Image (cartoon, rainbow, N blue to C red; front, side, top):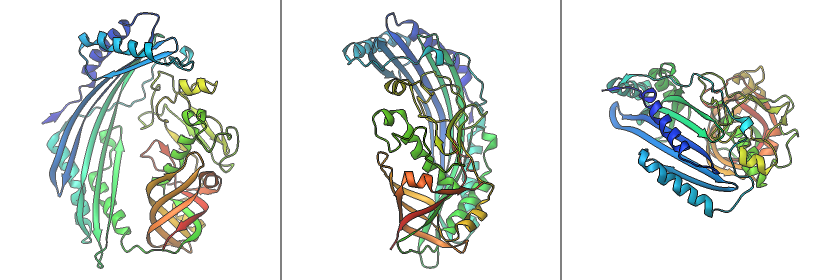
Length: 446
């Protein structure tokens, strides 16, 4: 069975639906029409055999109407043109009976992305199902054969996703684009001579199928990562340096994202409420947002309101330079939208001229955190407490795995106490960052 990407073939049809919906709305209402079509396939294997295969094809039409300061919002997955008047009627009725809000409304016309950009986000790939099953199964087969201590597989998963996004409004904005994303992941379980078991995984993801890591490489990395976790030890409760490995370091900046999001700012629900324009990181640390990097995971020409995306400095020499605002939160704060009506884009966190081995030596004694559990973060106070596993470091060298620990502190202190960031940049997410060394945190052990 051959899978063919039909996004281009369906594009004119979806544009026509958006056009007819928008033109069915009469004044004085202002309107935004959003169409998102998501298609793809999910294949899972276990012990080399096909376990499950799922095809998905989801269509969502969203109509948002504004009658002065009253908002009506309706979503539908029925693209029957005869149903368009009913959808609009429902949105109008909701708007008529909703409470007026002076901050409601379409995005400012001057901020809209009337000239679309081709960011090389669309990489359709025609493939045979059998070939993809073999590609997926090969990853776990490689992992299982890597070492006799690898005793069980948690399976391998291949995912292919194509998204078509069309956005139009009564300010004359009408744009759309396609994007693709592919991924392969594999997980296994290892057991030592004492019958204690550990699990781990590895994955690869890219806009282009051709740029995924080989299934052999994923299987080998998965096995190595799992074996390293065997024979963990508990440690006593101490206060010591913490090194967040690159693959989880981005989680620290995810907390920053929530803290500077406009909704939390205007609700006064953030520990950084009074810190715009102030130093919150070491003075060497900078974070730059780049939405237009070709083929990157976090690239986009406009946000969910049609606001054009632009390069932006988030942190400059340790100073917080901006909030992340959509139109509503911007009006609440008497500011302008920053084009963040959806998620962030590509964040680049600068690193020091130091590799991971040098960073571990710099730490000398402490813990490398490789996995985090739980969500013990209070974004209002900045208090931080999460379960963790990783490795104990003594005299600048990894000694043994550790488990059953809890690390705690306050995000304000953690941000300011970053000593160094190594150059082992994690590139699989939209936050590009190396491993982070923090001078001191509390570690609760046995």
